[in-house]
Image (tube, rainbow, N blue to C red; front, side, top):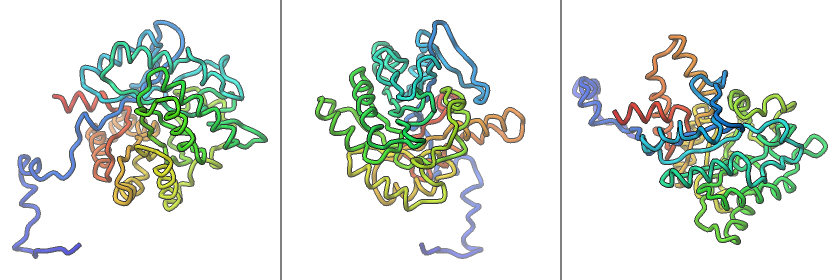
Length: 330
């Protein structure tokens, strides 16, 4: 890029001098249309639980989902994403609860479709909330078996689509699962169900609070580095993205978000496909705790979300969605 102009004739501070001018020339802006709200669901009745490691975030029993869904509806949040806190008694090594037609996700989908039909529903396809070992797939000899896991993931995706899920989001990082799931959905006449692929999901230290929220942290005795990506790599991410697009992904996801803005940017520039970013639990909690302790201002929330837009993200999954939407609306 060629830089034109020369001081003193060119003074860039002139276009920063007033609020109205800064508004006129802003290159990136955030709207409610950019926000996806993640929601944690638990079993029982009349339950709303605080999540200690995620200040301001709660788990809701299905009968209490209206507390948060009404807010999402009022603020015109375009899509929500459900994540289950599965009771230990329902977990096993195969993650069988993922295929239960009355599990927490299925109940949440049906309720949302009935009472909030204009809000999109995104559902994770992965087994870690359901397995007794905390991994995303079928564990054999201390290794997640790729192909056996895909067999279960396909059934999970079909069940979610049957219940009314609009967007299937495989977050497991198994090789080849996007193509198999796409074919299965099409065969069962779910051609209009979209796939968001967690195509660049890194083995990250930022997932801790989320694992608390879904109850998998205490089950996980090893790491996920054999299937989630090495944070030192970028070319590997582009290979993953390219393969998933060829297999039928409609949208791709980068997770975590802020440490991987370079990945988002290059995907957007090179693949010309919608890219979603997940501002994960660790990112959220660090910012939230910093604000609560007076270390940073709450303006850091907007700054972090605009960074995703500047990098090229089409939408952002963020636990700040309701708070930010409220501010944007006002």
